[in-house]
Image (cartoon, rainbow over the protein chains, first blue to last red):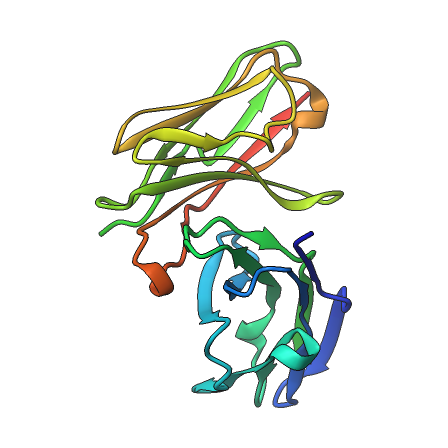
Length: 116
Length: 115
């Protein structure tokens, strides 16, 4: 079965703190894709990053970084020096199978609140 | 490109009425998805199309739900008759299959309230 677990329901930090959002996935496929999406208060879903199962390199984009570890089936997301604008719900998602169609299984989401 | 366009943004209807949600995918994308977001169930896939053909509708909750994609630039999701438990945010997304480098882009969603 394919599953994505985001154990942290809500996280609250003060601006400028670092915060890590956890994501654990389950799949029997050897080829799969992992994603993070952001849902700000306005409601849309914004694509942040994609990673395929053959690429375990960590990635950094500005204040955002992602740590992919196949050994622990985790794909964690860290925001460095958080800002109020980072307040949103963050979803980790999994797409599986050799054909990456964009069909996604989502975790339940982590609500991040960054206080000034 | 304008992105995925959904209409209406908000819909309030009475129980028993037919509801139609509309989606215009990103031009050139060959996959289209309908997702539903509720507090209880989170984001769940209802149905998806490839080149206008429905591929997997196993997520459609009941026969009251139907979706069509008559051409590459339009899809609709119909609920008939609607029920209060159908209240949710419905998202449309599209993607272009480029092998390893595919991601789905989402519309802004339609917030449906059935009273």
